[in-house]
Amino acid sequence: MAGAAYNTYGKGAYMSDRALNYIGGEWCWPDGAAEIPCVNPADTRDVICVAPDSPAEEVSRAVAAARAAYPAWKRTPPPERAKIITRAGQIMAERKNAMGALVTRECGKPLPEGLGDVQEAIDMAHLAAGEGRRMHGKTAPSELPDKLCLSFREPKGVCGLITPWNFPVAIPAWKGLHALICGNTIVLKPAEDTPMCGVEFVRALVDAGVPKGVVNLVHGSGEVTGKAIVEHGDIDLVSFTGSTQTGCYVASTCGATGKGVSLECGGKNAQIVMDDANLDLALEGATWGAFGTAGQRCTATSRLIVHEKVHDAMVERIVNAAKNVKVGNGMDDGVLTGPIINETQMRRVLEYIRIGRDDDGATLACGGERMSDGALAHGWFVRPTVFTGVTRGMRIFKEEIFGPVLSVVKVGSLDEAVETLNDCAYGLSSSIYTQDVNAAMRAMRDIEAGIVYINGPTIGAEVHMPFGGVKGTGNGHREAAWTGLDIFSEWKTVYVDYSGKLQRAQIDNAE
Image (cartoon, rainbow, N blue to C red; front, side):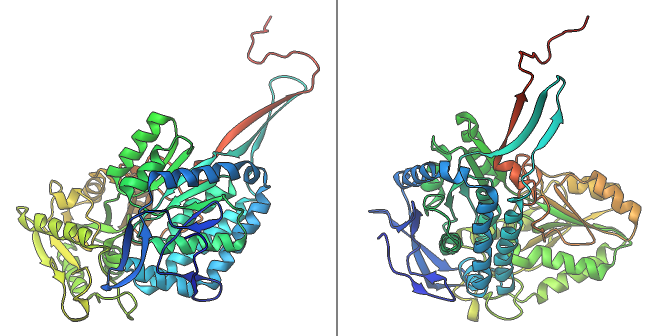
């Protein structure tokens, strides 16, 4: 189906009932590939498109196209690469409303969040393009006369990017635009639940003038297509965002074959509320952090750690807020909590709620069931849920749920609060609400997380700052900002000796 027609939607953007692959400059559907349906999680009667479950051979075609395009793209000066990325950002800005609506339709997040998802990609285009003139190396004095020492960045090669559904435009941009500005070529596999968002991101780059083969798009399941990317012998680096379990497989496979690997995995983020906190402000943060995007962010607030002096007042507030959260189709005004992404994940969230009910000591304060009445009858909705009386040994305290479920823990001091927050296999985002600057400084020092917020919720990353976590959250890399260049580039050190004679560094010449 190479060259299949698309219907226009919005200025310069396109839609189709088929999410095609893009390989070597051609839109195509692999022969004989099974169809993966993409449905609106808020209304499963709305079938958005079908995408191919691409076999390993299709991945190999994409890798070959990326490898063939790599030498010329590597030699393209970074400021010239930046011009294309700048144009792609401008194109996404022109298409923002349509792309934002597509994000909402495919992954269910409310429209303001869908628009924000696209805005992150636009912002990342500006940032990455700017790095085209800031890809600085370093020079240093030599220990020998008439010798120059310098270093500079070079691209890794062909990069496989495996991205999740919950930020279906932003995360491909976070990874892809940094990879491109460094001079790499890419093979992108978007999530099965949001294939058309992947198409629209790639189409913006294509329409901006990216050369054939530099950007390739391959749809499919993680078990087949994703596995083929991770195991392919001619891919130099894999950048993966997803579950920690899958991330461990990606890391071990890449390690066994010598590939570079960047992981962004799970989170079990906590917000601390101290006894001097502004409780109204803390409530806003907890409500947004726990129930925005239906709790389906790696940075979502899953644990609320509250000082005993304000515990009861805070619980009353958060339970009342949860009961009054507007749940529904993300296209409707005022919705905070949209649907769970698919039926499998909805059942997983409901199973964790059952586990919480069965934990001795935990109390289900509100929520806890599927919502399926009226306009919600055809979607995968879970009522915002709050557990109180949660202790550190409970599964709902320890394990990532990825749904609108908040566990409240009572503590007696700042030290206990930080110790409780750190008692976790993950370390992505964290938050503390306090008006005591000394308490805030100690929390900043002692919290084990890649991101710390003071008097703000656990979510809301900015593209010009490093993003990532510790422990089970990742493998030490930081996406976005200037640190994103470190993932997608290698350092080359060059020595220029103009002495006209053999000079041996680090040889003992002392008399």
